[in-house]
Image 1 (cartoon, helix red, strand yellow):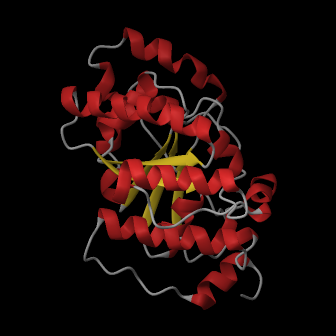
Image 2 (cartoon, helix red, strand yellow):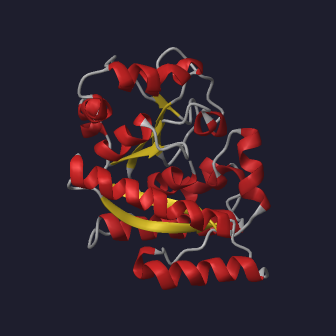
Length: 255
């Protein structure tokens, strides 16, 4: 949600697709689950995005295809489908021309839904909580990504790893970041997402960090991260200058 908002603030048309059956992204943005959802993408029904900022003046262009309550059966439906790994990619092809970037939000599960996302995507960004258990599952995910690249999507690449929930006062957090740098080098993004109460609070009111607390460390970090992501996926392309007046209207408070 916050990366999507950051990319939109930088001048991009962004579509978020909630592929997690729990629907956390949908609830994060304060959207009610409706009849048309990301589930439709895996059963070949037409897709329709909903604008996140209904009825408000906004400098952003960000839309959402939400998760729905019946998403739990999507894995079963996919298991029965022919060419089941490419259904999401075909669905996205019908609407991708309307957006500069499409972000898939996936669950930690490496099932058929996540596989569809990896087949449809060009670049994977991996958030890694700065604790050692997160490092344990990282190798499994990288192995799965490599398998999808070899069998189904040769264009797929890892764009970067994003260290989250970082507290520089904690030795453990610093050690995890050092370990990530030693193992993966430049794949680790320069921006660290610091542990910030505003980031944790914003889903309660259905707002991204920029509209909830534009002067917080969280907003600063996510805007830096969004800029860094743009530099990686579109090197040499200048992002639009941030219009502070527009962001002020969007946030609803002075910066």
